[in-house]
Length: 92
Image (cartoon, rainbow, N blue to C red; front, side):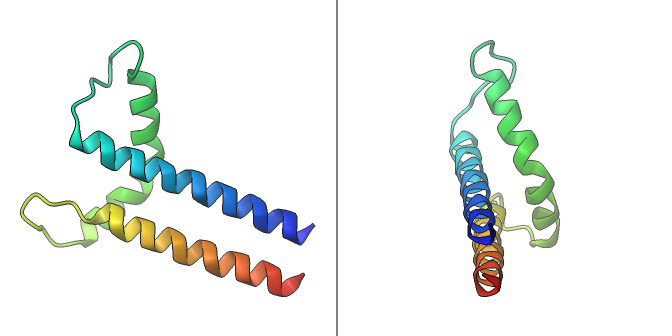
């Protein structure tokens, strides 16, 4: 049961990591958020990642237009995922 929970946590964190990567790629290209095909996907990616990206963005100093918040978020996600999985596996 605990191993299944650890696997589920791993999958959830991995999916969120992919969303952050997708947001980074979307920031490099211009996609209309109201386009009939891509709009809902783009809006979902931004709505799913903004609650974690915005607080990190507020903490980081201004880097002259460069946004390092995805890097910090990805490092934080990996650390939290690793700690949670290690904790659960130690309980198993």
